[in-house]
Image (cartoon, rainbow, N blue to C red; front, side):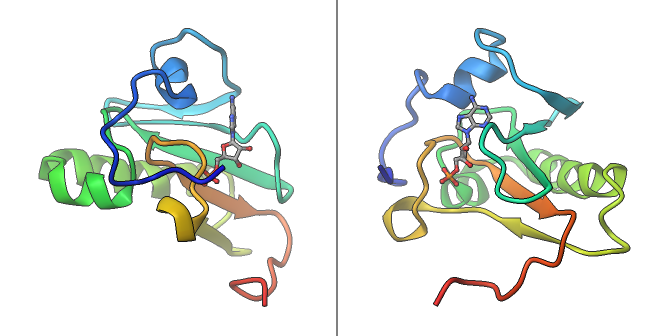
Length: 125
Ligand code: AMP
């Protein structure tokens, strides 16, 4: 069920629980700004989620409200994870769903990293 990306942050969301260590994840990277882990329902041979450390509902919320160092730290973390996974040479895709039309289901900003095979056209037609 898609969420309303303009709603206040919900501390009970599943990625908030992962950040607090209340439920496990299959971690691939962590630093001061971001946590990356394998998606529980992968859509490609590589499907990793990168989430910022902070209470941000969506890309919209994060880009408007986060401090510059948190934005740069998060963006660099996404690039670092993709590089660590060996994705830059074959290529990969980043995706951040926002709100209803974006079909965002978890109300904590996450960037999907997809790779490991040719990914086809950008959107289903
Ligand atoms: P989105 O539609 O962009 O909000 O994507 C949410 C993603 O989170 C989906 O790809 C889910 O498979 C994934 N997901 C949900 N719960 C978990 C979890 N506990 N651990 C890892 N990935 C999850």
